[in-house]
Length: 86
Image (spheres, one colour):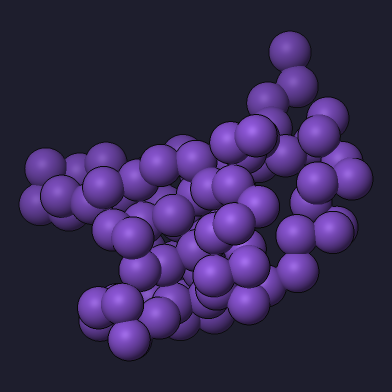
């Protein structure tokens, strides 16, 4: 079974994605310091799932991409590759 790349929001301040081969880290698309992001920048993954990393992670939706000013076009057109909240 082909696993999808998960598009996620971390702690309501960072938009990113989780690759199936690295399920315990979020790669950052955009981190908002205005919303309280203090870690993570493009190219620097955020570790998740460890007992010392208490992060709230949820699936992202189209509005999240608007809120973070990241284009959703390339993702929404490939639902077989990406998992997101509809």
